[in-house]
Length: 376
Image 1: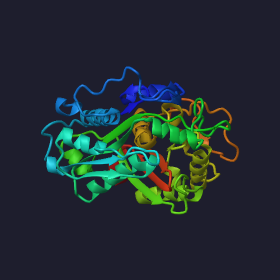
Image 2: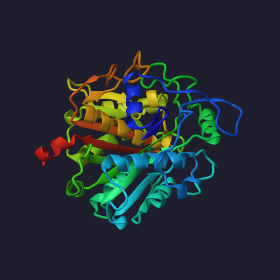
Image 3: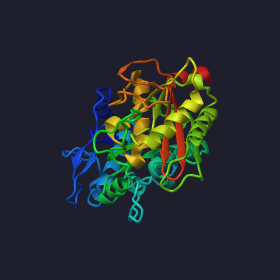
Image 4: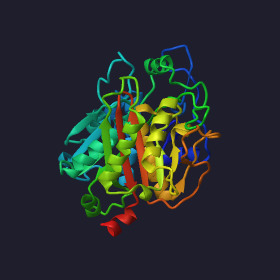
């Protein structure tokens, strides 16, 4: 992954554990007005392994996407000649764009496929802020249907002036640090970032001697057609999306140890996802811990779901939870078990939520690989 803290999961994890707030005054190229945002570090340099024959036409977002994809392949132990290129695929979430803004000339998924020599399907997914999570779910289905052995899935988001201006005009941007779930939450901090994963069947992974970081136990998605184009789904639909994800995995609510929420500091998003979680898990003795990455990484729009997923996997592997930066007094009515400090925690199952403007709701349920054989 690539985030406002640089390349790699480790830097982002350190920022989360320290509850470091994201954002700074930043002037994007070509404009004079600064925005409060969480761009890449000024000294960011893309992956040294990016082939020279493609590096000359990479824009900011494509460089991040290919950087993250190459990190994912290295983590998975895959390289040139690792398998039949016709059985490799790419699933990519389309970057968030402002209304009327030109779309990508070359989608990032195509850039990744060209650079890596992929000859299987290359799919692009919409869904606004949820497009990256939709890509991950699409990858799971490609593998489950036997249409690919390995899918590189995720999304990248760069920030341009039209996107920032649109968010500002909608009153969505905070003027300082985002404070998800806090009574002071007043908007998101838009961020740049990218996260990609290697998704493959259990049989294929074992056949090549791979050690999976996590198992995807279930996925869920829906579209709320009652939502306006610039509004989120309502809390009932958010809760239904969580229930679909749990049902797909065959899990009960009390089997979920941690929820990595898509709450980002926008009151509408915090309330919708928060009450969706509350409707699902209820006011009873057991609560899943609830946290979010947006306070420390900013909200990376199309890449927000994959970034949350990457940090959820890291939490599973470290057996630790990370706090919500800036959370002081929780919003009234949302009685959730918020993570307020970094600590060791037994984690077997983590739920990650994602929502996009216009009504898209998506979720992924992760499980520790060590549990897979026992449960099956």
